[in-house]
Length: 253
Image (cartoon, rainbow, N blue to C red; front, side, top):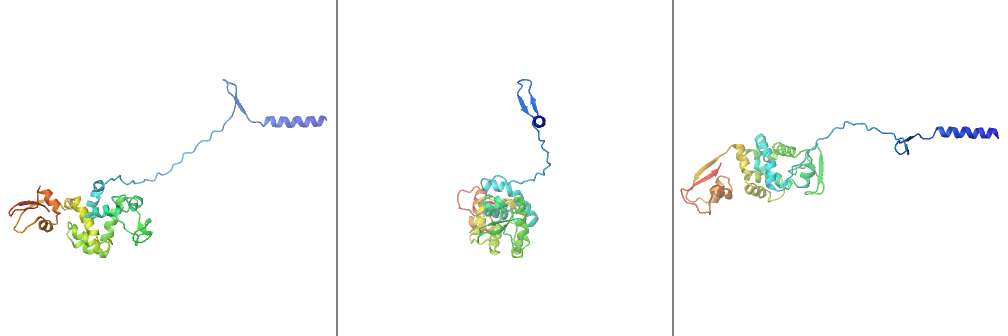
């Protein structure tokens, strides 16, 4: 019996020594369990720089954002800035289309021999492969390289750099787009938003004077100088379409 009591006493003493340590607060003498504090290790994570597309609400916003880039491309590659801008506006849906938003692809350029990032999108056929860029500016540069490095577009570079009408028609002829109205859509954008002025800035062209001759009309003069009728009327503050022989008109070079 004594041995049994001694054995129980040893067991009780052992468990009492192994019980959890408590801390008493001097203010209220309530026991609190001691907590272990885990120290968070600081990690030096590399922050990946993300280029966000600018907020664009309309065509005017788009032109403000990308006109400088288009002019730089014209200087380096000879593609009219007006053509580059009008294609960007049309192909990207003023930067709001899926390819522009998710892939920074502003010109609808498909993969072809592309080894970079890709995105798949329904176009002429379902889930076609399109190029994907990290920055919209890269899309502009690739557009210039795409046109200048492919033989089917080579004849375009023999045209005058401000002849946007022939460039628009030539792009369709070379197979850039399948829409039969593609050239006129580009021309309409260029003339409505006066995108040709960016060609003139690059070429450093200034206005010149022209005296109206017998048989001249606003349309014939506009065709002669590759200038929209609306721009001719606006530049000369004309109220109608009646011209007088000898009348002096300002013409954009």
